[in-house]
Length: 185
Ligand code: IMP
Image 1 (tube, protein in one colour):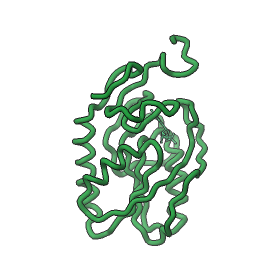
Image 2 (cartoon, helix red, strand yellow; image 1 turned 90 degrees about the vertical axis):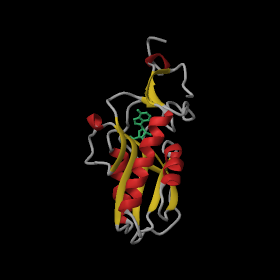
Image 3 (cartoon, helix red, strand yellow; image 1 turned 45 degrees about the horizontal axis):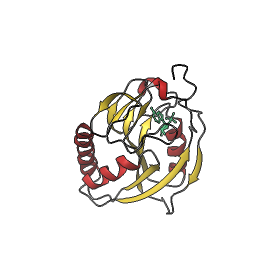
């Protein structure tokens, strides 16, 4: 397992993640049989999850990538969403699945889902690796969730802090000493 000195504890190992990702992919394959869904990867955090997920899906799917920002380098959500890279295709009548790394306050996905629905998608579902329901302020409930986690800042398997740690193959809690502005450095 590729862990890091800045990781306080591992929450999910590489093996646990791949088992769960396969389960969710199986569910999506059953639910969308014959529908050719469009999976939209929200960059950059969901990229690692996305490429593992699509390879476990057994039906025809299409993929697109979007980049939205709401966080900067902070461990607190700013609540704003800015589209930095948009999808390149018409969404009219499409069954869209937004693939996200983590649903925290839910603000990012609330705004993104609204935007994609307004473009004529026939339905927009949400698939996330991690869900932090205790932090939710927006009216969002992900349709496919790999793991629920408590209110802790996590890194690894695509998730970053200040652009680091995305390459770790497990998910874990960051040490407070690794967080900028921490007094216990
Ligand atoms: P939301 O709009 O508050 O739901 O924020 C969602 C985005 O915040 C995610 O896509 C992540 O990029 C980032 N985020 C929220 N919690 C964490 C965390 O624990 N680790 C890393 N990124 C996080």
